[in-house]
Length: 80
Image (tube, rainbow, N blue to C red; front, side):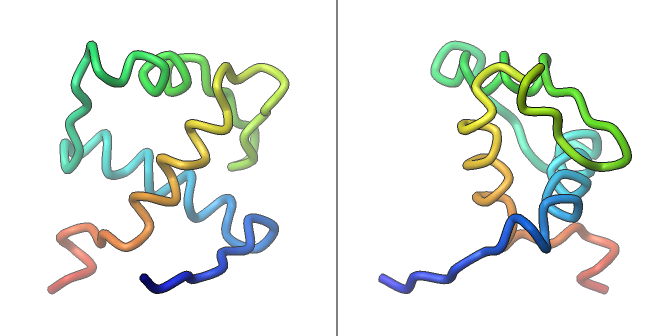
């Protein structure tokens, strides 16, 4: 196992925009019954200027984990 530290202080905006891009462009599909808390987190997510408002967002810790999971994946335009 390899552990790679990620600084949310530096990468939080990029992680949020990347997750949004991956979802909007259908690179990711989420099973509706197995990941109901993630879906709730995504539906309740509120950001201003790329900064996630964790006071308003339900299950923000699950959303943070989702953003980290998507980090290694690149969108198609960046791969060309």
